[in-house]
Length: 466
Ligand code: ADP
Image (tube, rainbow, N blue to C red):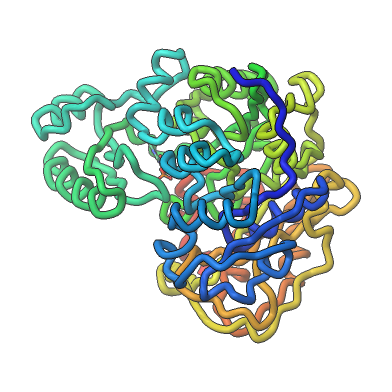
């Protein structure tokens, strides 16, 4: 393994919105010159204004701008960037992009293409984890997707089962199958959706857990063979299989279970010689206190701030440091977590209309006073807004409708929730529909405050949340 250290002096951020702003903030703290990229729709965007330099990519559709590998490589070369940070979404888990950076002598702030490729198929990832001894749900992740074979496998696993696109993401194309007679139709429609969303119709089959929690572990590895975990997060509150509220640490886990899951996640990362920030996602069965590997995300997650709040660490700085070839700043025994943090994702959407993305001009914006991006000072600041918008911006439907994240810290879970409610109530935005009130209702719901979390939370309480 190459252990030479290469300082990063000029960093291009191949993303937009709040995560581009978040990365720019930490890079600046490290004395790095930041270069933003933008599309037509983002000419006056906050991330462009925040960066030291900015370079135009192309028209608003992501395929012509934030997803255009050749344009991004050209932009990085033209601006003499020595590294690219991909953020999350867009090209962050794209093997071809990581390889293109490598070929052009640009450091990709993320894992190597091989580790990324190993985790890019859920089926391959499960096969690797099985060999590494990481607990898996009963399932089938082999190559034979014939109806005959899937029928045999589903009978062996036992209904209900879930079909997932092997290359899937964002909760798309998954089908729950409750009985044998529904399988054939579900397979056909899952294949159709997988093909159109991911260009590949391979599926995997898994036991469907009826009331699980989504618990994930933040891991970090450097180029020198060190790998650690930085506590865990509960991301069970989801709509359409997408997270909207996340918290750290996951409530109600015993210290020994937390440690077991952390160690399983490190084992998972080490099985693929992982480098950088990664998240190992598990489904957790609270009754049996058992956990099962679901997938590994090979990038910084949207919800990383809750981990930063409880550990006092700046994970973007860790990423840059690791990409430069430097060792991890802390060993496992030096990583501590204190208190509790909760994050709410603020979306431009119509909560009455099946969470349909909303658009419009932000004619008024008043974000609460907070320690924006004051990573590492949670105890002093208690709340943080990671926002990608400014007054006057137009929210379009070209990109993900998440506008900002509001994160709060407290000595315990109840005070973190209370703090988050208070900050959210001060967040004012006019001109575009948002889910702020909906988030408030979740935070005030007795089942949420009592920590009765399952991935069906929203479904169960839909009526009282509207
Ligand atoms: P994606 O990559 O599309 O986000 P995941 O495999 O991460 O898909 O699953 C997303 C969500 O779907 C999980 O957080 C969970 O709520 C639900 N889910 C996935 N697999 C199962 C399962 N076997 N049993 C129950 N729920 C599941």
